[in-house]
Image (cartoon, rainbow, N blue to C red; front, side):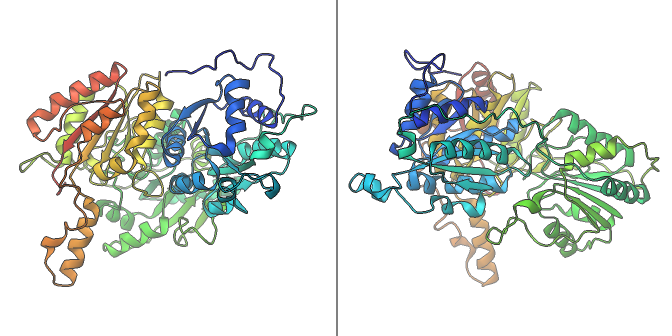
Length: 576
């Protein structure tokens, strides 16, 4: 990655002279490697300190072209590392720009330290016009309903305490973004004496809580009595040992496993105990398993109530005893409905699901084998028809990657779960939590940042609507020389809503042929390759022939593995 050291500056023996110098020193001690930002005058003092006091190292500034992209980059980084990145957003206007991406990160339960700023709270210090429109009372209220904690401290000492507290809070499970708003006057305040810098390395407390002994015993008893156990695996960590424990636990009980595409890889998709390809919505075959199971263990599953309801609507009502392990209740509030419906469970375990798995895997309870009949995994759909299908794209991409390490950062809505090949926690990262269009490019850049130097190539498959809405985010990848491959699955429309319009027309006995109106991204067709090249990516013309796809993707993978930022625009059939 390209680093930018400040000329003639560096932490070394530099004196802490200003309020923002003390803040920059604290951010360094937090071991934050990066801070993504769009420059803004409300934190000009902190910006100067990060560059001229701290030497633009730990954290290093990452210049972005939109605050929503800056937050999305931190989101993608956290999905890989499990660690918070810092983001700086300018005043109320920057926070409003960032708000959609903050909601995504909140719904996805990732850690993030967002540093905001405001014009002078003291009205007597405001410059005419601009400081007035960039100052708000209670600025944190803009995102309070979908962040974990916020504060607006009134002194340098309080600001240091607030930043340290925020850093601790965002890492504690369940993780979510935190926001600290710094008055520009505090940043630019000269220091008469050195304030105490909080010792952020002192706190050795665990960042998540495990289950109590009674919950472990009750779970073991229910699983021990099960004939047809079923595991629903949702939001879980990237640790390889935890991955192995899940496999061990499922094999011990002979439990079948369901995962989904909303979350990252949590279990080997090719394992015999994972018989149903993951989907964004519940596949019919998974509904059948839910109806047949006698014990269901939900580990961080997103929307247990909706999943059980969907299975019943598909003709498979659940009669199982249900165990649900999640820490999600700690973030529930009256504004956001991302806590979903009331879970119909027999045992609720308010703990980190991975820690419950560890406790269960460490048990020496005797287990009887399950009675699930043998099942074959469903295969991917065969290629058919003219044009390029999503399955064609997946097959060609698998061939181009040829078994070398890659991380599938993102897939579009039309992706078939049977085309996902996951055998490692970083093989697939999942979606964005809040289903906000435009998040994909920024999250891809964040994942590339986290994976830089790992030998694992980040690959994002983005819909054309998602890419065009957030596409300028990729400039940051080119600016900092982050190897990345983006494949645009281009169907020239917001096709998800085409499907909705067709459904409405059929229900109302109206012509379905009008469903494209207000949805098409054509006439003119955006030139994705030219757009990407203007932002520093390597890109050639659109691929619209199935036979040309393998060679185009092979060349793109080779270029990305050599260190380039690469985009391939693939015209896919709308019906895929």
